[in-house]
Length: 202
Image (cartoon, rainbow, N blue to C red; front, side):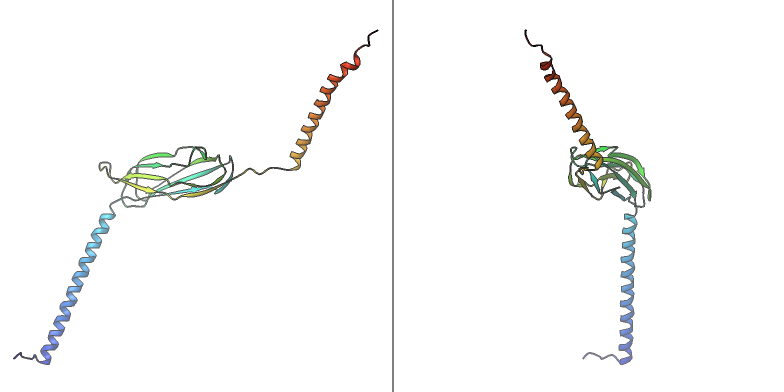
């Protein structure tokens, strides 16, 4: 027959079991934190490029221009090397670009920001979305592994040119018509006058 432990022994066994379980739990918790810490430390060794695209106005008139500003920031904890910015805008018959849309930097250090702008002229009426710009970069000058970041998109509305029916334009139109009338009258007199000046045959 099995010997039944005394109440005092049973209590000690429960306490020892509880303490052992608690120690095992603490050990596992420490191991998980250490593993997480190692993962974080590894990820913190890499650079991280954040790029944004903004415009000074989102609605313009046909043939007017707006300014696009690009901001590139290294939000990582190590230097990004061979950073290349490329922006592919819409078709050339939609927008005409004045300025550089491809720029390269040898490196961008952590928490460092590079900013530049270019001018875009609207050539076609409509609603458009400026495509995302791309930034390629590497974690080392030696390692060929290349990373890619994308910017946000921007919406642009291009409106027709409003017809100006102001009083000044009305006066200009009346003046132009008056000049045409005078020229027409002079031309008519040059044609008709010689007929009256002819002598009748004797």
